[in-house]
Image 1 (tube, rainbow, N blue to C red):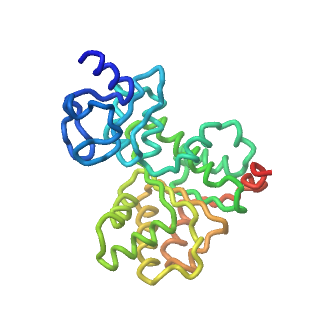
Image 2: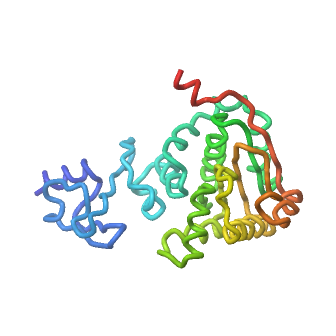
Image 3: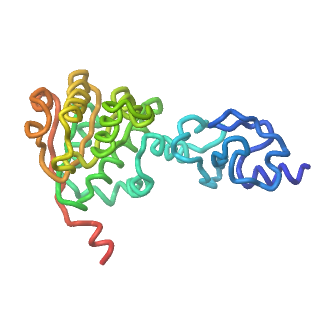
Length: 265
């Protein structure tokens, strides 16, 4: 039995008596025999451990904030889990780790540094496709979460918000609508790829996003936005957004080549 327990701890970081973050089922030794990959009760992937020096074996993103405890994960892994829980795509989490690589992207980095310092509540980045806007946002969110352990971030895209607004209007499954609530309540909201769906905005969607952005600006809640084009508030959203952004937001252009094409060359 001792050998089996050691094998389970090495493989997953779980032991009999640990509970599933999804269904609450407490695993028995019988449940874990054969080193299963999923909870036998709900089939959710088993958590996998760091417990330092550092294995970097992590849980799926949706559960990250629940169990990223100091007694189970090193500081670096806890930060990774918080970024995943915020919704930051894995490839951006990895790319944002190298700050020095992105120092030359001014004035965008200067604007983001002032945002981190609290000089303004909102920053809007725009630039060519592949110029690195999303990476810069991920880098900035990483800096904030590292400096502020209690801060909750929410990363989303225009497409996801429009889908969530449609679900709320149609009174469909509640799960997509939860995104709107997360976006309203998060300490830091990131909206990537804004204005990327020409003609995709219904009147209700435009009102929902106008309310979301305008209320955050009014309350001084932190907001980061990235787009391939300069702000088009008046074209799509109502006048409150443009007016409030002028009062507390900054717009910066990201200059540089298409990094995706460069990497593929």
